[in-house]
Length: 98
Image 1 (tube, rainbow, N blue to C red):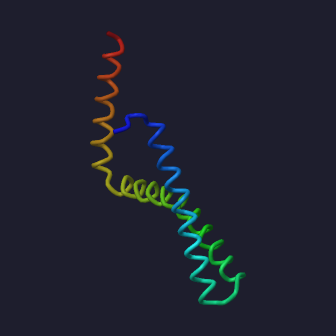
Image 2 (tube, rainbow, N blue to C red; image 1 turned 180 degrees about the horizontal axis):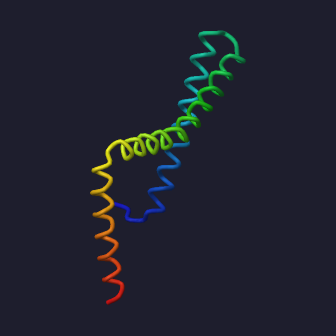
Image 3 (cartoon, rainbow, N blue to C red; image 1 turned 90 degrees about the vertical axis):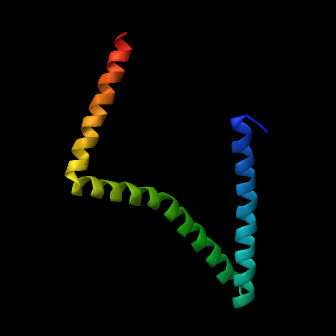
């Protein structure tokens, strides 16, 4: 078992790159066979890439927005969380003084 973090990230990036080319290749091939036109196949791959990028950046925004909505609608939970946070900050401040 490899314990080097850089190895795992390099390995995952290589696998992701290979799978990306395979995925877009299969998608291009299927659309090309269905439409018998390279332009439509290229457009399908391009649109798939754009929607993938959009979702990659939109999903964290969606999670943050839903979290903010939950925080604004549940005031009691927010008060409890703020109190816990203040306790933790006080404990960290005491530890840093010592």
